[in-house]
Length: 141
Image (tube, rainbow, N blue to C red; front, side):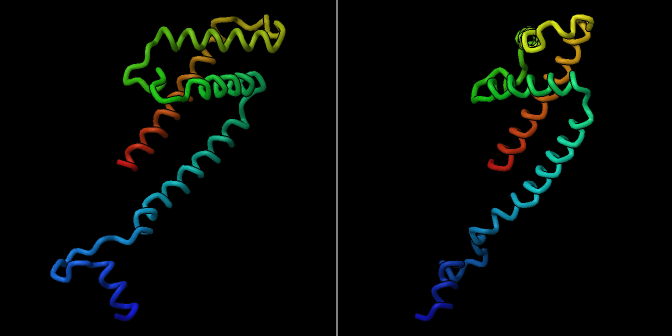
């Protein structure tokens, strides 16, 4: 038996069967385009973050750190309906951490406005992570 017959038998073990199994590398071709798309979205996201003000940039780093701590299987971040009170509590914790890091430097800022900005950043980061996880699991299913 020569090499071509071995290869032919591997691709179509049943000669009467007209349907051929896909090659192992063919499945990865589906992921290749989405990886480049995801990388491009990440680059654009980083570019947009570079336009943030100094305060928003500091808050964004705190929000990402908090989301990194919450990013595990079974986290409330990935619940179908996340608890609003827990999300508001998390935003208040981020505001406290921001105040500790700046030693009361931004006392002139209204606390409600700061909490609103933290909320927007936090909810958007949650949305990004939930969307990325949904895309990942939909690809694998």
